[in-house]
Length: 410
Image 1 (spheres, helix red, strand yellow):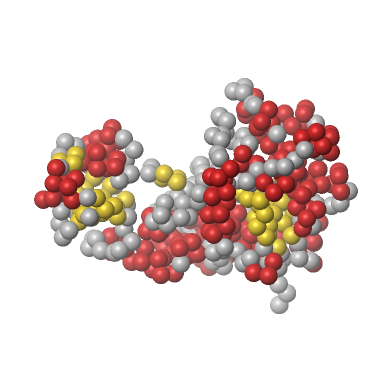
Image 2 (tube, helix red, strand yellow):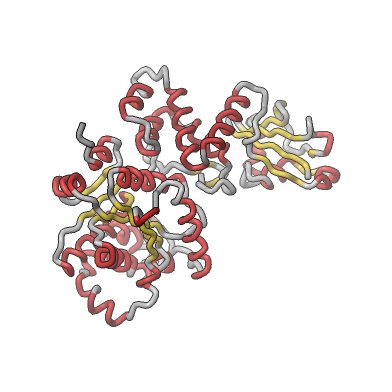
């Protein structure tokens, strides 16, 4: 049986949003190994669940014999992408950016095979940091129309609030990345999130003009829910791929508890589960929707944190659902014994461990009877927790129906 064209796989699973010369690129991906790139700005020290769509695209492409370049934005991060931002991005030091890039490389190595040149890590600081400005503007800037750039969505949104010349350079810098990668690695395709279409087309046009060769551009679906809002955020913050920032249990629980309407889309975008199986799990009627959620949570947690952590998270989730409160993957905070010898107010404790962001949020949850301590509802936001509050050496907090957190003494 002939192998399926990876373009068709990406299309059927819902990854592709916009693409230049669809028939040409499908034909190219079917007949030769194509080097392509995806850029990631090093603004944090961990990738997030939102990045996972791009990671899965790279995985599908690599399994089909194509070569990914992960371009870390060591240079462009020093400028900041204005796309979707209402204010100028905070400036990061060179040392911070280098640290973040190193962390990204470690995380991506779990999903992408870098052995024997099967994938490439590149950092645009290598060519952007030492550019001669006059030469750069003469060679590259001449190909960009300011009138056309100002019609791009990423700039239009910022014009009323103010757009710095620093940020205005971002599109030209990202476009130059494509040219450099074409020259260094014969890169023929750039893939990015749907919000990057203007920037991606800039590079696509630049390579075609300067090198007089055929290259391509493609954007992918962003990870959004059925209402069009970005997924991967909770009340307590971002869902990170770093287990120190988001525990495997929290990661698992986030996916296990997503809206029924979003399960099919997440299975298609975030897992390798075959489409036929997904269709059966998510068939109209929804009798298997809980099974689908368990498979989604387990498969993604397994890819990110390993099978043993996925099994532990699954067991912990099931034990809590069944009411016995066991399982070692439950988010845990260790607090010094003397804190409880003196006593700590429940509102302060909730903000201290990150369950709430403020005392007013804590009051609201307690007033709505949304908080339990060791299985008992809390109806007083003035209570003080002491050593007597511990049962079997721990305090088990439960917010709403799904958020658990345990306190242990050190």
